[in-house]
Amino acid sequence: MSLRCQNCGAFFKGSVSPYQKFVKCQHCGSVISVLSDSPDGAVKRVVFTETIVEPRKVFSIEEFAAFLNKRGIKAFDPVSGILKLGSQEVCISAEGAVAGPEPLKLRAERWVQNFMSS
Image (cartoon, rainbow, N blue to C red; front, top):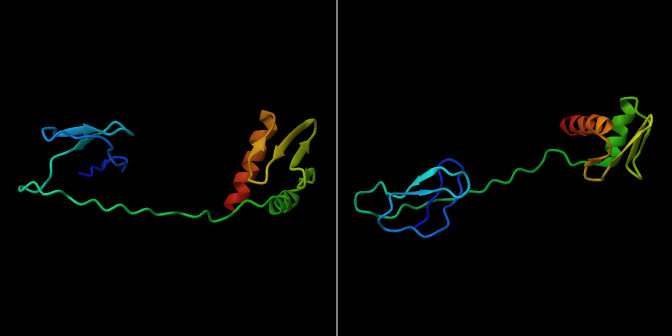
């Protein structure tokens, strides 16, 4: 028998006794009813559909450099991924991950988020 959680959609993996009425979801902890709705005890069929959503925009470090240039920030090197403002310096990877000290890191993460949403 295939049981699916109504709360999170995860399938229950484990053994179910024929005398059990409920089982606990292993992912979210909610209660899953084991009883079938049909009076004859027929097994319900569960159809699982997976939808894959592709991101609308893929991060490009060259396009991000042009985005920063439009905003007046000329201290970004797209080859090394280093952004230097004043005495602070962060590194932006080709995937858009920002590494560095907090004040500039938060600002650079906001710029990456604005770039990806534009």
